[in-house]
Length: 504
Image 1 (cartoon, rainbow, N blue to C red):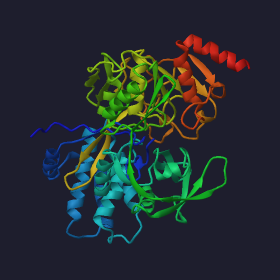
Image 2 (image 1 turned 180 degrees about the vertical axis):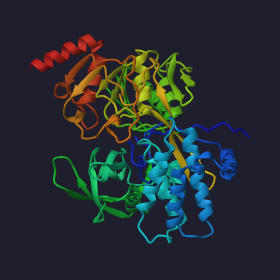
Image 3 (image 1 turned 120 degrees about the vertical axis):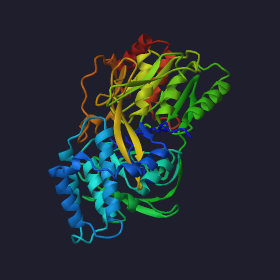
Image 4 (image 1 turned 30 degrees about the horizontal axis):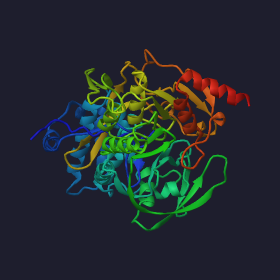
């Protein structure tokens, strides 16, 4: 049996994907891209290492935590088991987190988390006390690290398969307003069809206020059986609050969609899930057949793609590169692991435009950045989200798991995306570029890294209103500019055409 870690990367998250991570209903904690999961054997050994005394257990901070735990937790048969569960998790944070941690600070946070529990001291279930302690402790690390209780751990594994039940939205807790914020509605889901938008705030669920409640409470309110209704109160920027009723459904993510605009192929990737690379290959084959092998260019649309599985983002980038590094991952030890192109360019060098925006995060930033660094594509749109961290999912000995930030990824040029994002070669300014959504660097406890040694600068900036409309609904002007650029045959001719349109 292989005992190497099973890498399973997924960006919830965006996903931003914050407080305790992104939740993709039916519940995905964090999303935002870049997660791995340890092999089952790790769970077997983890049950043993919690029995040994650790140096921190003699510290004043730990003794304070233990007194608080003993004061609040009910003295029953699983109390000591749960205390060992906490110790197991805490020890993994100490050893495996991206950076060295301040143990005293983390234990103090755990104490405060316990003290915020409602209920009479000495009567609280140990499972609830442990969960509160771990939520608070890990919540001090960064927006994408979190403790997954058994249900959340199970759900996180379901979502990466691309099929789950719920509304079809990615959410996080907005720290300014203390309500739920929609990161992105998933295309062709109940939430998408109901008109929910990125940046919308959910203030009430079925008339019950969400303000000030934790994200688990909100998720329980939002979840439900397929074909049942839920009423959401939405606060949208510039509008009065309004209600929308949505019927829950079984969600199947179709991660790759395609269309043709004249002789241009358009492929949109909404998430990087387990079948995205195969779906991309299928889409390209269909487009080539439809256009009788006369496709003159390709638009790769990664707008509002919050990320997903790392191996799938590498495979997608590989589909457009003949050789060279795609991304490297570097952890606490400083050792680097690289992923390189190997399959060859499936489009035989066709011109490519990649579309990104503030909702493009993690795995989608890997693809856009790699193609940009290799000069394989022109990147168009707005600066991306800037999530350049890797989260590893580690099952715990008792149950549940930790999602910990364990590494950063670096593009072929050596630059990191973390906090900076991918800057487009051609920027688009206009209505669709305006968003209330914050970027990675704006989030509480966001990881800070040094300024990249090399960072491409935006070469040109154009107004969205000057772009021709395109797309199935005839309203997508950013896509229209991408198609126009490919039809122009060169960046210079495209800019000349745009200048003439601007003068009209």
